[in-house]
Length: 208
Image (cartoon, rainbow, N blue to C red):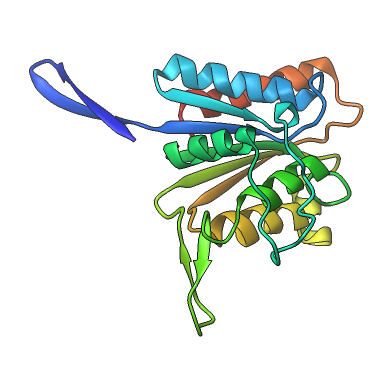
């Protein structure tokens, strides 16, 4: 986060700008998620803030944590670069669809490989508690669904949100984590999709 000072009618005003990491978790470059991510990016750029993108599908890495936590896998250069962006950012914006109640497999693999003990958190010796290494950051999850958001929360318990928001981001110290549902996507009309694009652009413009 950085700040600058300007004057308005002789009064000094300090503006605080966020550094934003935009993490796109959809594997299809032609998806509506990519259009949403681009709208958010344009909004941030028009606000004057800094933004860096992590497009997971474009990264060269093995999404399979093949040894679990018994043996550490070396991180590929693309994952190391992604982690640098996450550390640099004040605000993490995740754009992804909900598939079978969860995250796309490549997004889950990205988290498995990167949000590691010693990187994102560390268990304390002989304790049930842990140290959170991403404290001070905030996040916003923008997720597309094929059912109303209230229905997803009430009848399914919003598993993808619990996984990413509670079990990953908040576990590592990221807080608060806002959620925006975009849907119902299936059979949506172009007019409605344009409204969603404008909504997400506005979120980026307001640095939310």
